[in-house]
Length: 181
Image (cartoon, rainbow, N blue to C red):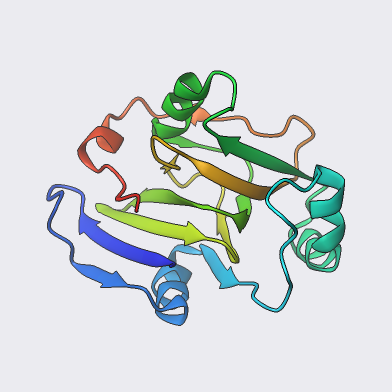
């Protein structure tokens, strides 16, 4: 289930706002220019589907989204307990960072948390199957799919280099662990 929990960045464990309502989540994130929406009118492919199959199923959505954002490519990332170097990958995502392009993800299967750090607030966005999130360029954030991840997500890129992070050096992610169900 999609979720949003907002904290003051000096008070972990003391939520100021919490919701599981997709419209309320989108409304709360909109002033940050974070796009959040649900794509629920398409049947997702099976968990083990090939990248080509996943891209084909979502092609109409991707074409629209890529046209709106000027993105140039899309791929599929799959993270589970069999992912090589899983611990190192998780640590990389768990460090607060920014990007020089919007980070756009659509959750085909599984769940994960994008945690944003903006203007003294921490926004823990729990994304699940059917959720689209777009974190704007320059917003400090981190991602966690938990210690036993099971995620298949579409990634959309503007730059040909793909996922490139500029780490902030802030250890805030250690103070605000995501609540993975």
